[in-house]
Image (cartoon, rainbow, N blue to C red; front, side):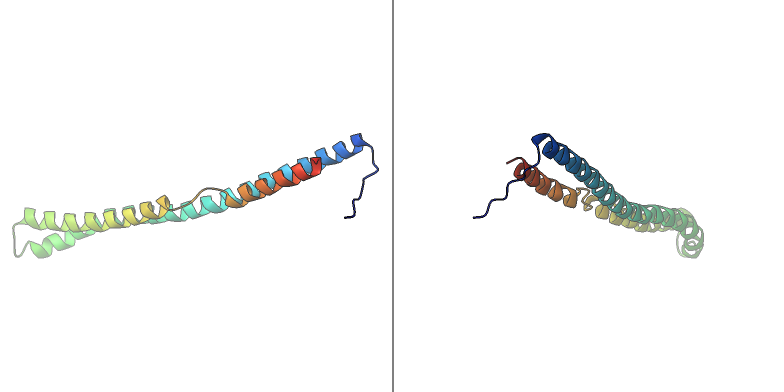
Length: 130
């Protein structure tokens, strides 16, 4: 086994270790920011589903209450026609909102890459001090 000994003074070695550790920490923070930004973007997209579902449910409620109520009014009392149409619009809106909420619940916010590289950095630092 070939062992290479560094002939630099101990103070210089610690200075280099401190500089490299500082650089490493900055890089890890940058990686964590990148990961969190990516995950926040995914959450934002799911928020669009929720907002779109809510808007559609509201618009559908108003339009369907008007149009279908008029159609159903020909075969049943007006109050019953309005109730049926309202229930349908609310049901569709509920479905869309639940779809968005379910997708959000399955979104993992853990910065896995950062955690892995921090573990690797810990091993590297131990090796440097050995």
